[in-house]
Amino acid sequence: MKFNYANPYASTRLPVFARNVVSTSHPLASQAGLRMLWKGGNAVDAAIAAAATLTICEPVSNGLGSDAFGIVWDGKELHGLNASGRAPQSWTPEYFKRKYGDSATAPPKRGFDSVTVPGAVASWVAMSERFGKLPFGDLMEPAIEIAERGYLLPVVVQEKWAAATNELKSLPGFAENFLPWGRAPHVGELFQFKAAARGLRAIAQSKGQAFYGGEIAHAIEKFSSANNGSLKASDFAAYQPEWVKPIGKNYRGYTLHEIPPNGQGIAALIALGVLDKFDLGSLAVDGVDSQHLQIEAMKLAFADVYRYVAEPASMEVTVEQMLDDAYLASRAKLIDMKRAQDFGAGNPVKGGTIYLSAADENGMMVSFIQSNYMGFGSGCVEPSFGISLQNRGHAFSLDPSALNPANLVAPGKRPFHTIIPAFLTKDGQPVMSYGVMGANMQPQGHLQTLVRMLDYGQNPQAACDAPRWRYNEGFEINVEANMAAPTVQGLAERGHRMEVINDSYQDFGAGQFIWRAGDPKVEGYVVASDPRRDGLAAGF
Picture 1 (cartoon, rainbow, N blue to C red):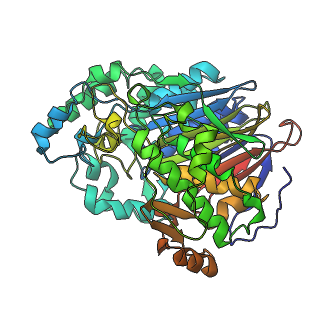
Picture 2: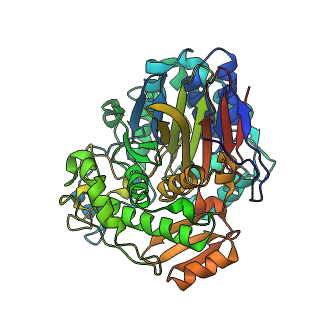
Picture 3: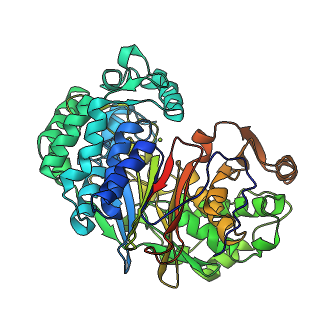
């Protein structure tokens, strides 16, 4: 692919070219990854070190109590890792109905009854054991040092930190850990997280065992019990991440790979399969026709995903049925280029997050994502070890008659999940590790940025900088304030109900992109980092 390096969008960043690279949403995390590469580690070592550091430097999005997913190119093939959390053994619809009444349709948004067993630490251990070169304890060193000594709060993280304060300040452990001086830190103020430094040391010394059966697991059980929760150390001890085969869909001679359900990565594949039926490249890149077509394809994808995707054993249709070319062609025929529509699900049977990427000169590439879900997650922070716990349990349903009954809560079950890493190949060879964080924005970001690169030849940084839209539901979409006025007007005329949003962090996600330029020992990689976060693409 030959890119156009003239960037038509306002940006403070340029693509980075190097042979060993890390791209994350915080500069200290990117540098933590580079430290591992300098020490002789590989891309997996770099990704783990960066991920651990991000739990400290971007706690508004993730923590030691996060879930995670990863895709690793080991030099020969792709490997997927699903480290999403499972429900405690106590969780049944009856458990929640007793506590919250018969009218409850989902577990609560915050508090301990929103917390499934976190998988992020297990993902670090699993990737290190299978692919890493450096001792696991070395990978935790940068995060431990930063947690202990502290760091100055950056602009975007501080804004989201302050915005979360009113909702979360009364939740157990939150104020103690995240509201020093009784408030959120200001930009440029020193934030120290000594409790998390203790947690990271215990994780480092035990290779994660302290978290999944040792002192941290027991501390979380005690903390949960004291706050009317039901998480047990035995729930942690039973947890294992799962190595999976990524699913894929061909598009314009390339193949996009995603983690299979229980995640929403299949939404990007469905939307691409629909768009493959159109000559998108003949339409103006930022024009109303191109954007309308992509929005409608994304709507079709979400209609099926929200109806069918859940824990794989519970799904009533298969991934293969949902991605069948004939089925997607039939869905593509539903699109009207002149008007927006509110699509229902088809019948395939007939036919809060951080993302990072790392790559090394030996060809290993890692696409990795971890999340506490809704900014600071459950709001519960175990005080002894600084474990900020996710709220993924809120994604379960309590109603067997809901739109997607397969997502009904059950002991040991994984909920429908939003966080998704992505990977692009061509003819079986690696091309790009990338991702765009931000709830249901993630497959939408995968789609929009990939279309810009493959259909329009925009380089990764330009594709990252370009204005985005976000589909919500029905006819409702959000668009970024810098989207061209004629395009916004044209979308409105076709029936899209739009809100123009200035808050790019909250509504439009943020991505990291590593494109392989050729032989990594010679040409290396082209790297981009999203200006919607405080991030950094760095390399040597």
